[in-house]
Image (cartoon, rainbow, N blue to C red; front, side, top):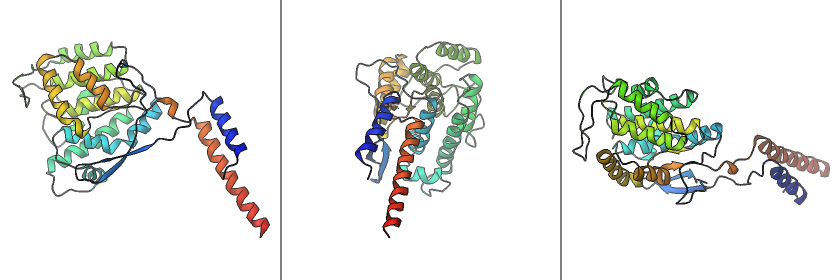
Length: 299
């Protein structure tokens, strides 16, 4: 076991490196619809009810690691928002290349496409969102599902749960909207605006909610602001707020919901530096070598 002197040295080292907190990422247990437990990282957000939307507290590398750890859960949540009757274990099986007999070909394809779209955004974090980027996201998300994947909508659409009908978008109107969003200074607010604009504008014939969530996550991750995904337990509330947003174009309530219920972000203080991690590993290695050497000498 590590002696008090070694522990003291490590604590001093940690304190000298920007006072990074000695916090291990805790694990919390939740349950999927089929009753099976799922372990997921608990968030260390440091938020209060009245804190404004800002606070991007991670480096991009930290955020990418968080995205990778949450990848299957994010896809599961996105599939559930889409109305796919899938469990977390089934999503994980499809993610790993398996087939779920109870799901249709289209539903399995949607989940596989989300996997491909996530890989794309993680590989293209240096690319700022624009018309071309969003079109390609939709092309990935709707691949092998509709002929018009990745093409701006030219036909009317109806939205479930409301009589409100979105206008047919034009390239000019979308570019103006994206330019407006790009001028928003706060990256979290910018990501939420992008997400809501794609959803309400119904830029594509299908896949708008999935495209919007992926586009928002690319903007969040590239700025170290976390991951946005709607928990399954919050789907009904999200749907209600989304319909209200469609009908009124009032963003405040749904933005607060996204921030408080759907945004996962770690406080940067919860991460040890590379030097600290190496120091701890080296301490373990030396302790084991000394213990083995002492045993050999005693024999």
